[in-house]
Length: 205
Image 1: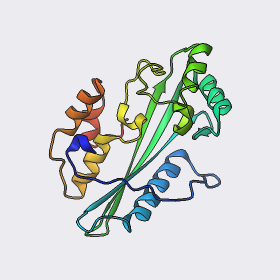
Image 2: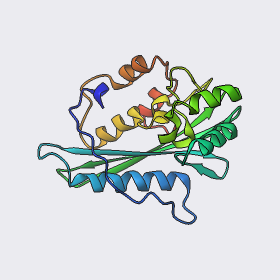
Image 3: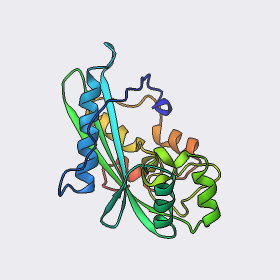
Image 4: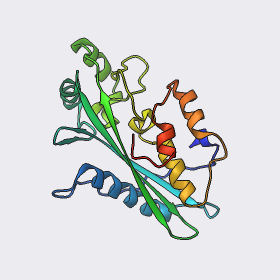
């Protein structure tokens, strides 16, 4: 949010994140984002106009990989994801507190993992960084760097697809005060191949 030069405060609403029977990954993350936005609305500052919420999950085959319960599960997840492509689903919800209007969006990104070694897994899990990450990894970790050859939205894999946020805010009559796409790419040192398409309204991620 700071990249868009918006003033903001962080709220962590307590919501039930259990997946419903038969719920598809996209439906799941969008529902949770919407639930979080509505739950956080009551804690908004009087001067706030928007509540922005997101939820991210890692999808490998038929399975959703959330945050690992412990180091052993983190290692198991990282071994499972090693050397092939999975998907990251990020649901986004923006609630306009003035009108009560809520809009959602969904970003699905293919994430190719490199063939990192067993020693790298052990070292990374030893940092405790994977324990609060869906799928047990952070794409931006400076030494582990588990992803190679990404051709989608880097920010979405981190948990907040900023171009998707920009286009949702535009639909609500608000524009970011800076070139958010350029700022995002400069901050992440990533030449994004999908940002222009996202801002045009295409379903790419």
